[in-house]
Length: 340
Ligand code: FA5
Image: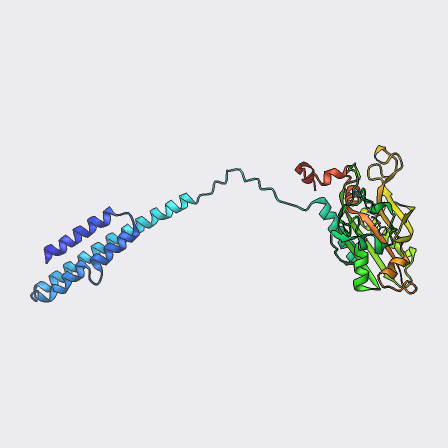
C-alpha cells in the first residue's frame, strides 16, 4: 500500500506540473481525489490492513492527499494569474492612440429654421398642421379663388401630375383643408415643400419651402395681421429688424401685401447684395382672406374674417444665417453644412 500511495503521489504531482489549463487540473482532482479517484480507492483497502499498519498507512495517506492538494492549489493560483495576465494584455487600452474622428450629425439649417418657426408660432397660439405635397388642382387653385386663366396655373409655372393633380405650388391649399376640416375659429400654421417651374438663381429654386399661417375668427382685421407678423419678425430676427410692406395681388386675399426685411448684409445701409435698397429679397406674401375663399370652405364670411400669410423658409434661413445663394441649401456640401 505504501508503494501504491507513493506512486499515486508522484504521478499526480508530475501530471499537475505538466498541464496548462484549469479544466485539466479539475480532471486530475476528480481522477485522484474524487469519490472514485485512485487515492480514495486505495484508502478503501485500509480495512484489510492489520491494526498496527492502519494508523501508519492512514497518516501516510493523509500526507499524500495534503501534498497533492497543496500542489494543486499552487498550480491553480499560477494558472489563474496567467489567464488574468493574458486577459489584461488582450484588453489593454492604448490611451496614447489618436481618437477616431467620429463626425456627429446635426440638423440641416433649413430644418432648424423650419422647427424654430413652428415653435415660435406654437408659442403664439397657432396649431401645427400638415398637408400633402401632391395636391388637387381644386385645393391648390380653385378653392383659393384663382381664376381659370391665372398665369400660375400654366404648365410653364406648375408641375402637373395629371389634369387634376399637381405638385403643390404653395402651402396655401393646407388653409383650404384646415378650414374644411375644422371650420372657424381657426389659428394654424403648416410648413413643408413646395414646387414651381421657376428658373434657379440666387434666390429661386424649383423646390423650396414655405410656412403658411391662417387665423379665422370674428372681427379679425389687418391690424391683427400686422401685429402678428411684426411680433414674429422681431422675435425671430431680433428687435432691430425693420419691415417693409408693399401692396400686392393674390387671388385668395384682399387686400394683399408682400413683405421685405432689412438687408442681412448691410443692415439697411445699401450694398450690392440688396441693389443698394437696404432691403432683403421678398420674404412673404400676406393679406386678408378673400370672402369667397371662406365661403368655398363653408365658413360664413358675414360673421368671420381672417388673415393669412405664406413665407419662404429658405429665404428666411438665408436672411437669418447670412447665406447669399439658395443653392447652398440644397447642394449638401459638408464644408457649408458643418458651419451650422
Ligand atoms: C405665395 O405662394 C402665396 N401662397 C403666399 C400667401 C399666402 C399670400 C397666404 C397671402 C396669403 P409667393 O408666390 O409670393 O406667394 O411666395 C411666397 C414666398 O415664397 C415668397 O415671398 C418667397 O419667400 C418664397 N418663394 C416663392 N418662390 C420661390 C422660389 N422659387 N424659390 C424660393 N423661394 C420662393
